[in-house]
Image (tube, rainbow, N blue to C red; front, side, top):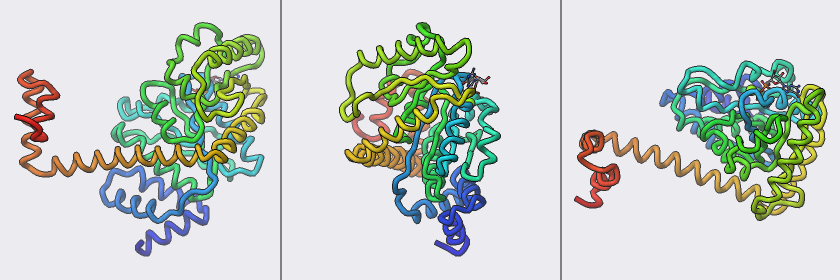
Amino acid sequence: LGGAADTLREGLLAGNRRALARAVTLAESTHPEDRAEARDLLGALPEPEGTLRIGLTGAPGVGKSTFIEAFGLYLARLGQRLAVLAVDPSSSLSGGSILGDKTRMDKLARHPSAFIRPSPSGGATGGVARRTREVIRLAEAAGHGTVLVETVGVGQSETLVAELTDIFVLLIGPGAGDELQGVKRGIMELADLVLVTKADGTLAQAAELTRAEYQGALRLMRPRPGDPDGFPRVMAVSALQDSGIPEVWLAIDALAAHRRATGALRARRGAQAVAAFRREAGHLLLEQFRADPASAARWQAAEADVQAGRLSPEDAAGRLMDRHD
Ligand SMILES: Nc1nc2c(ncn2[C@@H]2O[C@H](COP(=O)(O)OP(=O)(O)O)[C@@H](O)[C@H]2O)c(=O)[nH]1
Ligand SMILES: [Mg+2]
């Protein structure tokens, strides 16, 4: 690394907040020079040891941000240094964030042990996974050993977050019955922990009903190999009344310890790294292919043929790669 990059790396490893913010800005940049610098920096970081990445998803308004703030403050009180990242692929389309302004998490943001990064707007959807992956690594290098990744439960963002984290938490509202149909089966299968939010006041009873219903539904699902007893688990929480929060941490900690002991955590991260490599290599191969003017022209012609219905997409793709003629 060069002089400036060395300084940045040292600041980062010393846990310097300004260095971390600067490194994150580099990773989020689309300028080729910044990208190269970010890549060099990431390549020069040590492997993260003993860190924990927790993904949290749920419909808008379910209480994700409020829970994360309460949970984060609890972890900070336990002496942990944490990072909170928001993933919002929709912001690249709409230009605005659907995670809402609660993403600011004012109290947690003021805590010296917490690093909070809202979802950057703009940029291609394909870049969201890469950017988030890099920001996770940077935050960990700066000593934020617990990383919480919040995403709104729409489209592909939940599976994306499950691919970036060690433990996946689904938050649902306290409305029993109707909700069960609303949650996609695929998400239920990914969830390690289901939290029924807003279990307080007039909603407490409904929350308990929903909790029991989901626990029953999960029991009927195919058991996942490698899960310890009692997982996936459903719990009711209230961020407003600060109840159920220590229990959630106990459950996550127990699951993480189990996955570390069995090697499942390491294996999961390995598979995630391979998936990231495939995305990245695929992207670079495509870029390289289209950088050649003749190839770019053939690509354009193929798209025109597909658009006009002269060729099927499969045929056009095959011809582009000279598989048949
Ligand atoms: N009663 C109750 N309301 C809550 C709780 N957590 C969040 N809310 C409310 O639910 C709304 C949405 O919360 P927010 O955290 O922004 O949801 P998000 O869109 O999932 O991030 C806000 O009006 C919160 O005050 C809770 O534990 N109890
Ligand atoms: Mg939110």
